[in-house]
Image (cartoon, rainbow, N blue to C red; front, top):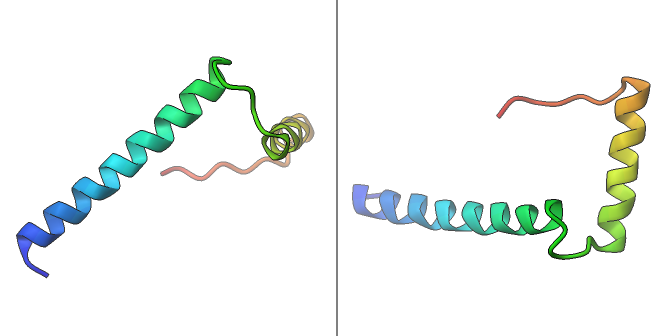
Length: 59
């Protein structure tokens, strides 16, 4: 892989991450209502957090 190809791939990944971040932001501020599966995942997260069984991994 050439340097130019690597840079292109990194830019593509950055673009996708920015899109994902935008989607998450719209959910968090309430612009878009969360989907049913997201609601259940949020409830599961909150339950695990209360029980102290939530494990977060540093990125």
